[in-house]
Amino acid sequence: MTDTLWHINSDSLGEDREIGGRLIQTFWNSLEEQMEGQSTFASSTFAFINRGIFLTLEDSPVLEALKRLEERGSLLLSCGTCLDYFQAKERLAVGEVGNMARLQKLMLSSSKVVTL
Image 1 (cartoon, rainbow, N blue to C red):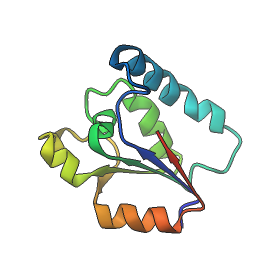
Image 2 (tube, one colour):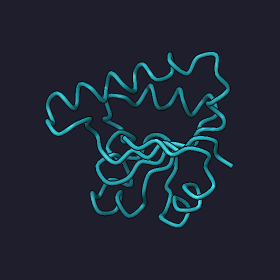
Image 3 (cartoon, rainbow, N blue to C red):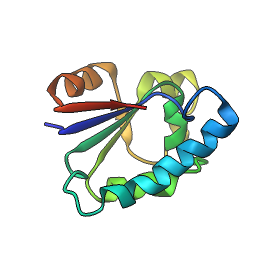
Image 4 (cartoon, helix red, strand yellow):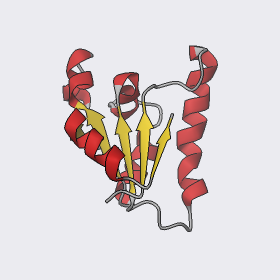
């Protein structure tokens, strides 16, 4: 069971893509620091859908931060349909390919769902 499911549906925070791109980088690059000392890594799942999958690709500005989360026990899933739609499956650089059925099960079984 996942304690916290992080549902990431964009590679930006907020409506303005320019400032939103900066904000998302700050968010991911500081999240590990905020979680330090907590046992939340192994019980957290990060599900990337729609444009959120771009954060898990080779050229992602937050790739190293995501790799560290995975190394500490977090599960990272990128939507397979989204990877196919954006023709990006071969560029996936962290985590694994997920699907809607798995995401639905995680949503239903998680204690908390955080949407970005």
